[in-house]
Amino acid sequence: MEANNKPQKTVRAWIGEGDKRVEFDMPVETARNLRNLQRIIREQNELNEKNKTIAMQTKEFNFNNQTINFELKNKNIMVNATEMANAFGKKCIKFLELENTLELVKKLVERENLALESQKIDNSQSPNSDFGKSENSESQGGNSDFGNQSQKVISPFENEKKYTLGDEFTSKGKLVKVVRGGSSPGTWMDRRIAIAFAMWLDAEFYLWVCETIDEILFGSFREEEAILKSIAGIQQKIFEKEEALKSNPALKELDDLRKAEKMERRRYDNLKNAKITGFKTLFSQSEMTGQ
Image (cartoon, rainbow, N blue to C red; front, side):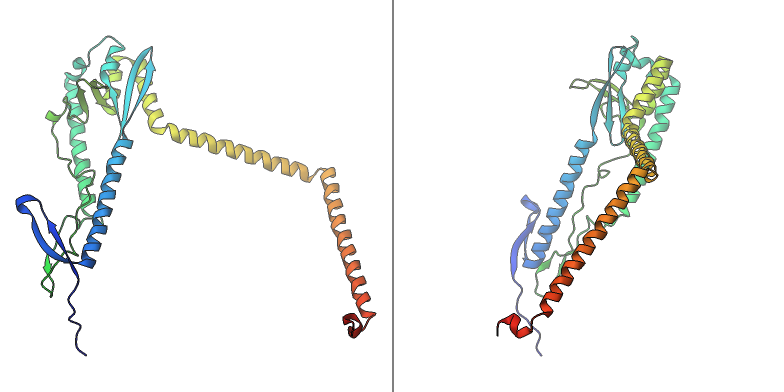
């Protein structure tokens, strides 16, 4: 049997833009698969961007008539240190200039970089780790087969670079961020530094900051726990009521009456059925059919 040498249907495709644009013929099925892959990548990237927006929210709290903003971002909390300092008529620069503070920031920068490197390793070992590689093999028909071409889904850690202590105390800071203008100006501190700053300002304020951070991070869990306790309490009361009713003479009498009613109904149905059967036997089948 001769092999089917019927040429594949192709479509005109290209990669690159401007002077780097290269056109080629691509099998229709390969083009369809590539479009589906590109759609999945686009949807994933849109979801990543949406998650970044959802992940950041600012909550406003009040301490002794002083508004203090807490920013929740990527499971971490930043606190507006300028507002913290204003509550006591102080400047956060005094705290930031302390040797112990600089050492704390330095250690946290080192930890953040280690965590970032670990996340990159985990990301490279994921099932999508082959994304970003492309293969251009020539098919027997002379067409470029891009069926193995993949594009990389943008990871949240894709553009993260190792940063130094010099990145802190600027608008790029992750631990101590200085925001000039906008809706949330001021110096913002990572929760660990903010807690140390609060202790430097005032012991009672330190406790308030710790409790506020706990409420932001774990408040929903406490609410869920309270609901579960409430459900357990209701279930216990139901059980106790059921046990009490079991020994109640009135309930037993009611149960006996229901059983007696069922028995009488069964007797009635049996009697009615017996009458119908006896009536049928009085006549022959020909008489019943009128023949």
